[in-house]
Image 1 (cartoon, rainbow, N blue to C red):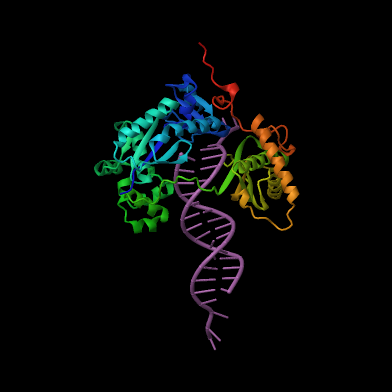
Image 2 (cartoon, rainbow, N blue to C red; image 1 turned 180 degrees about the vertical axis):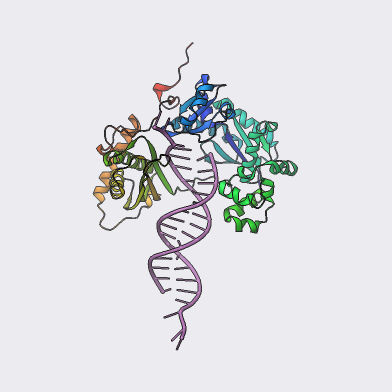
Length: 423
DNA sequence: TCTGGGGTCCTAGGACCC
DNA sequence: TCTGGGGTCCTAGGACCC
């Protein structure tokens, strides 16, 4: 008998986090926009009811926004990250182990809690999160991660569950699975849904009943595992230790297109510096750097997209070295005459800094000097804000900087911006 | 005028080796 | 006339997720 798994996730998380500090957002449609205020990435129930979809470009729903007084906010990741800590603190006593799956979702290993009424247990957990953070949540319970995820979606969609769906009971599970669109199953995307749709599989129940060998043939091992999980056979466990990350990226769309190399390089230099900072904050070094940039693929204009990958040798987290390599790649890939709207720096081949292989003829003293320089840079930028101290190559005008015109304050992480309650 | 950012995993196919 | 087989490693690209 496997122990029950729960998935708890926050409803309209970014919107809910914003509402925690701004009462005027309650009861009205709210959307949080992606970087550059480009598209809607979180919608309150009221906004969903207006037909605003995930990923809708803001400029295409302007009419709706104005007609219904939709409040649009730029994303404030510092706030969402800090609120996540508080949500996790509320959840912690209710599970044996927690796997943080995303900024607003966690899998819980409920081993040891089986003897309790798990629905009541989950309701108590939701109440705790709500009380500590004002953020509403839903909980799904099942014998596998896929079923817990599916239960969670059911709890969200169907009010009869009152926020908690426990699908360990077979007849209830069958009832839900038979009504659950296969395209909404965790791991079934557009391509897979179309492929198995042709075979007459349209519900989660039908996918569960697909012969496992056929699943392997139609999809890959991924679909095979998914069918097993729907049948209640775990193909994955709640992972309690954070796995070593494999890559990291800093990529951005520009507020204004870049037409000359220096402007583009300014953005790329900043991303490379930021990537180095991220590496160092995780105690990692990278062995490979990729730099890319491209034109706006939605625009009816000449298109160009380029990327270059370079070895970082010796492996390093030195921001200035990353900038140097990124420049080399960008120079190589550069083509005149285009309006570039997005660029990025991606680091791969990551390992812990202390495991970094030493190379022959390494300039030990030089490396150490650089390490100290980076330490000082991190200290300055940590204390006075990102981008306080930067290499001159990032430029001074930074006209590529993203728009974020409707960003909420750093309510919880910046003393000058904490909310003030007046008597 | 204006369409996000950051991840993971899997597979196929080429290079290379013995 | 007759021209292997099997393994590893790496990369690019697809699919999917939040």
